[in-house]
Image (tube, rainbow, N blue to C red):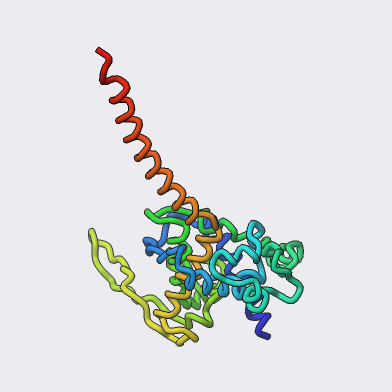
Length: 254
């Protein structure tokens, strides 16, 4: 039963991300995602959430499980906590549902999520900002076939994949009059049913998941930044040496 719930949640997230990429530029402004790809504890928790809620229905075909050693996990920890019985630590993160069956059952093949955090930008934010906002702005809407809607992606076609963690909420609006027209301005949330996490814990969990998705999109990004800093320092020092050497070479030339 637990595996079925995870399978359903993972598929919902996968198909929701398809729709999110295709959504219009409408919706609310995106919140800033707390991305810290050097925070190993956050990345490890995000990896756990990714495996539990995402990997059942869509893959990360450019990522291998053993690459998680880069975020501080040992090979034994990966085997004990993040691998399915049929997986090996050197395997890529394959989807556990057959793609052909997924397309037949649900009308679309869940997308690969390796680069999802880099695939969307807008509203002055990044793909990580979109994912962070999207996964935190689901609410109950009985007028929709699924019973769910989303402020970041209005009229979303999939229910909240993490609803057990978040619980059920509804948005609170304030009616304001502007230029002779009434508008509903979003003011906050009202908790209808509690989830297994508090609102703060849920925001932190989504932040960890998005942080992991951002890291997974380019695992070498921290090394690239460090190397870039040292290259700039070297070029600065070399430029100074070259300048002084040039001055010494030409000082006796009239």
